[in-house]
Image 1 (cartoon, helix red, strand yellow):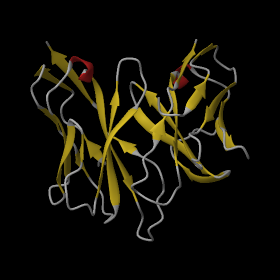
Image 2 (cartoon, rainbow over the protein chains, first blue to last red; image 1 turned 180 degrees about the horizontal axis):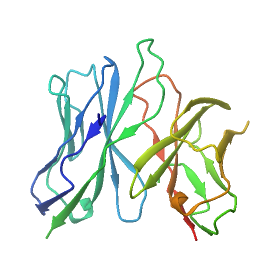
Image 3 (cartoon, rainbow over the protein chains, first blue to last red; image 1 turned 45 degrees about the vertical axis):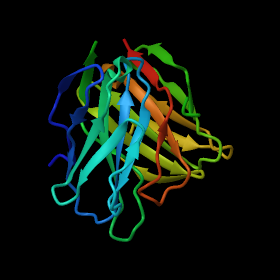
Image 4 (spheres, each protein chain N blue to C red; image 1 turned 180 degrees about the vertical axis):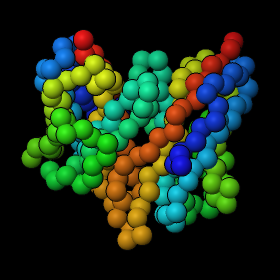
Length: 119
Length: 115
């Protein structure tokens, strides 16, 4: 089974509007971290936001917020007031810890969602 | 700028050849991770080093090897290259290796093209 599922291959949004990018995950660990990264056409991977499995509040970082629904195993990224520069590929990723608490370290990525912001 | 540097930015080589990709982590980071991004496989974890020691291996081919040096920079060696090895190779770094909340910061990547 896919560990991270991003069901939207592409999304379009009008400038200044909000957009939600979906992410569902699968893990049997109690302790895990969820990350969102942005990859512009230039190729670099830019960290956006983090949500821990034990965090009670949804994470926010400027125009980015995370709609974390633990029971549904979803961690959707919300971008408010979209800008033209937000056009990029967005990846959801998960870092798990095993039962002993030692993290294996690796990030498991979804397939990504291409976001296009229209003027 | 994430603070992680990778060289070279682009690499074009022929099948059967060997190349070395280099990564310098952010100042203070002890962990280095290597990832491969290709169109068919997406982003795949290759290997993780912490303070000079290998900590975890992912889908890394036997033709590939890596190491982390005492100054904490890391090298990924790819040998007997095949067309399918063409990809974007990322290095990422984080402070430690035990906490799920540690953010991995990515370098700009090395784009490898095997002809």
